[in-house]
Image 1 (cartoon, helix red, strand yellow):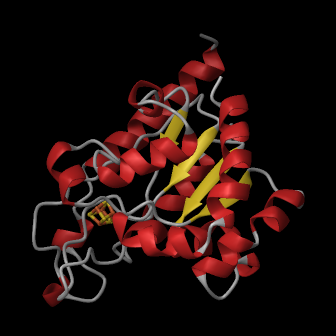
Image 2: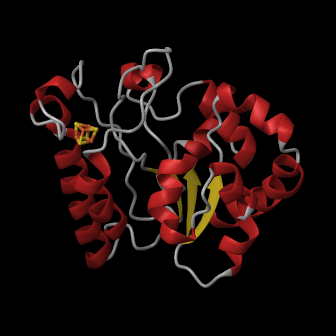
Image 3: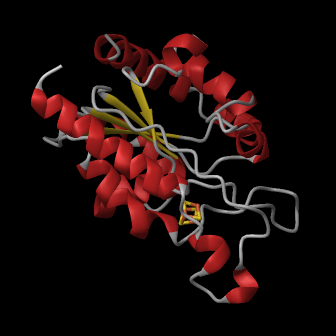
Length: 215
Ligand code: SF4
């Protein structure tokens, strides 16, 4: 390992440790004490000095919160199927960095769905995390929050339109490249049925890129 590589590893480890120790949403929530995270935060970042693919997810669900393993649920199974990788490859930090928009499980809304990523998280951590991994060549922007952050004004008004525009995002000069995806949750099974072009046209390109960059 070169000295530069060692320095980067140390910097990433320091950042990982700092994020893991973060308790902002419990101790100093942006919208005041009533918006305190109702459970102990458990940030789950997978940072890497060598992965060329970044999985930019939304926020961990309860199962991920309990196990400390990202995408360790049915959504993860579907995502791995989309990427055509097995669990060993998916959890190899030399292949994939996994950085959700909110590092901690945000809890449930009144209908039993997961709340959005905590608003405190991305402003606090995301720019530093992305800057610490300059080798990333492809960002898989999953869901509207990641798409808003990684595509900025280029994002279309809706998640569907943004994903439908995937070719235009890949065709422009952008480093890293950004490929928008819907969330792989079972809640999006209806969306997948309504948008068959996603599996027929986007997934083959996604798999091709992943195959090339995971080496
Ligand atoms: S969600 Fe982000 S900002 Fe909030 S406690 Fe977890 S790591 Fe910290």
